[in-house]
Image (cartoon, rainbow, N blue to C red):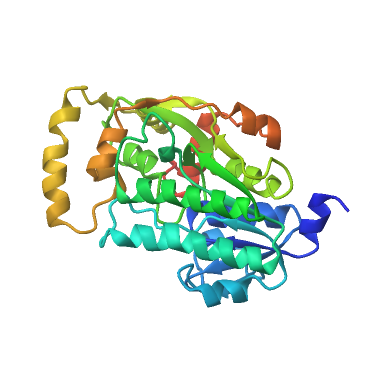
Length: 321
């Protein structure tokens, strides 16, 4: 029996299934004929779930070990995407409780349940050159990777992914797609001078599914498509919409911009990720990643960035009628 056949004999559990990547993982598994159990904190809703009404749900929280153990019955593989993604959560310790202790609970329960493989979604923020930028979310992801590695040494086969800048459809909040929507709402958007390798979320989901039987246990893979500056992403949006100009922040603002943001974050407890001081610093980094090893290992191809942007704008209803 092949590794893929062994995984297909049971169900695949997706944690964080109501999130941007998570729901795309459910779709990718379903499209490949897997039986899926979605682990969510509350019953999901929204257009991203249209067509997934028959997916089995397990309601719970990764901080609750008993709920995870119950959800793992009959499971052969786990895609662990559950995370608190707010860069500066309130209280800040929540990032540790969810992202580190929650990951420890999932790994411990999976090892006891005899799960064949666990695929963990980390973050490109754990890699140089941005690993020196500190924030509760970034730190918790670094510690969570250590937890996953420790359980791999105990016998749980694990694969860790560090995705680049995820874009694409089925994003409910929105999350990283907020940059595209900002550029769509404003004819003259102002964006930082940095950039990053972008990745269509559907390709990221495909890699996660294939990692259930491909890839070296204990390994960490970078998922990255072509490099794009944030300004170029804004220009693609404005080109699709037919008008507008993108303005780029001068580099000297990196040193004065955090001051009003720090003041605002002290006043407002629910600041968007893009308006936090760590994200502001991140926006000035030209962050070049190589996903070549993952592309070869998992047979990935990357659609044109403009296609991903169009699909994303169409999903949010931001395309002209």
